[in-house]
Length: 113
Length: 114
Image (tube, rainbow over all chains, first blue to last red):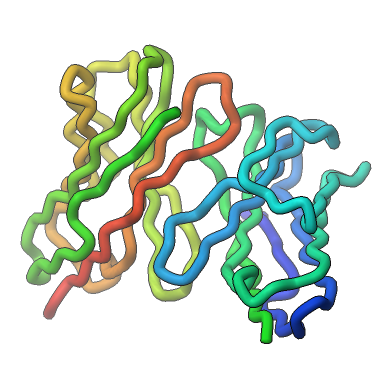
């Protein structure tokens, strides 16, 4: 079965650079979520999109932005990267709300040096 | 705001034995959903089991079952016949009905020993 695809798997950036993470949800899933998981931490909700519109927002820094495109894939853009942005970034998708549980992608490991 | 607490940072169990991971949560809502996710060293987050708050019957998925105590706001995960492949970080998560986001606990690192 198709899963949530994230790219790239690993990314190394320098401070103050920009990074773009991509997410391709499961076909027919209409909701996409982004989570940030710091080292040894639990995942923290960043933002979600339902039918290409931002539907909820969590602790996402102003330096970050995201959008969902007409083909339902989503991109998380991070600018002016800081060392503290180093984390695992998960994308997940679901059909409707999160009440049925998400399907997560394998994550993108971002390292800021 | 909802909070999820996992009081056991680490646990270990012998292969083939049974282990129970604890989770408590705090909410004033009546319509919500609870989940256990597994994160093995491969780092993929995998849904293990889901419980609907309005259902009294405890959810079961093969060797995984929950003990859902709504009044006590407790949601523990029991793993029977533990296998080496069960070694992973286990996260308890809460979803308020109608909401999209999941609130996670801090996780319990489970090691299954041969």
